[in-house]
Length: 99
Image (tube, rainbow, N blue to C red):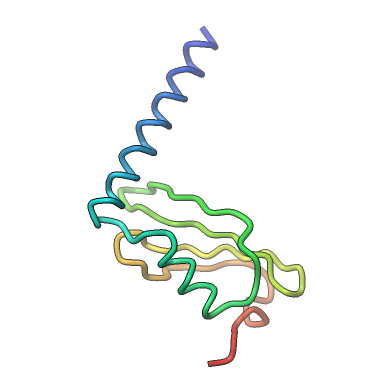
């Protein structure tokens, strides 16, 4: 029973990935390099993790960065238009680059 649940979960995850990939290819979602370029031009740090998720009908990029003081900050972008919609973490201002 457990094996069938794991296999089903794996297949669903693979289908979700393909659907999201196809949406990027069709231009319905902003490509990840565009988001990363924007982020790295405005904030200091190293990207730790990137996730592309669906949440309440919206598709989001969640990007974790490690800042220069060791702080971890998560940035959330609307994948449909690339807009930054939220960020959380410690000492975010220390990561901002000067204009």
